[in-house]
Length: 105
Image (cartoon, rainbow, N blue to C red; front, side, top):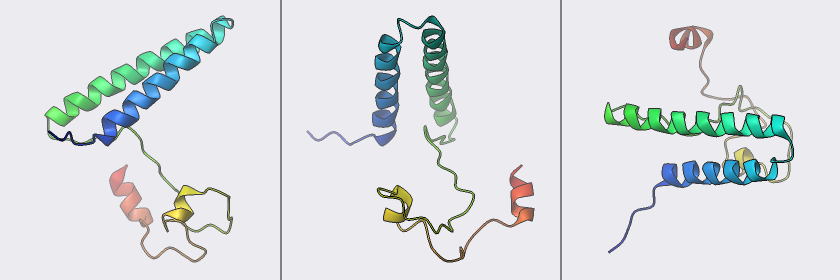
């Protein structure tokens, strides 16, 4: 029996674990604890909403990385974007136009 790897569940569980551990670490700071509890609750609501949307046939990813541009002249060590060939030193060949952005909004 081979289980398939569920990336979304893995990422969601990972964030929940980080939040729980961070919450434990903030017990000495009531303001930070309140913030983290609110963050944890928002994450749970978001996860539930993603499940509801999935049941309606809409895929909502748990993470979204949006880049304003793919043109970058920096060479940051460990850059995931450059490692995946998503960050270029030249002008991008496929970007949304102003009209396309308006259609989205």
